[in-house]
Length: 211
Ligand SMILES: N[C@@H](CCC(=O)N[C@@H](CS)C(=O)NCC(=O)O)C(=O)O
Image 1 (cartoon, rainbow, N blue to C red):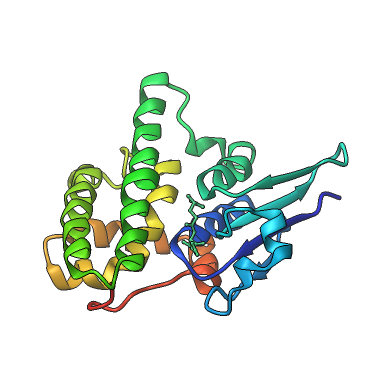
Image 2: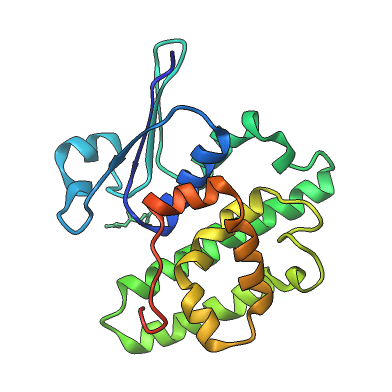
């Protein structure tokens, strides 16, 4: 049997990998790290992931080799491409639209979401990031005003990629107003048992005032 292990902490990027693990329905051992206690900077963990970030995924392949993945989007693809091909459109144009949305989730929204937290000591920086973040979030979710899922009538990997940031900032989006289409979609995502299960251990939700 393949041994699969997911190292995580309650965080946006961990939640993405955890949702993928739950949706794939494969046996994955979960190891929770305490980031505040520095578990992600121990020599043992840095040997696995030199970046010192979560999530990290380790799998013993049938060849005996070890696969280590330290990017949540890659973990999601690795687990979901075989288990849930329906999340990846066959049509090349549809597929590149979905991919573009995944890139927006990962390199724009998730990145700015993290930076707002790391730069909390600098209110001007947070303000600058918040404006960019909200503009890009509005652009990414414009389609939800007329369709149920981020990229159209069917759920895709883009929905999985985007969900964690909205999970984290949901209370803030609600307090701001104008994002009911996004909050309705997030509620639809939570109707999935896999999303609820993953959020129960890997989810992090900020208060309306939190950075
Ligand atoms: N691009 C990576 C980002 C991973 C990342 O930055 N994880 C954060 C938690 S969401 C982390 O480990 N932060 C702790 C630190 O950087 O010290 C991914 O998508 O997995």
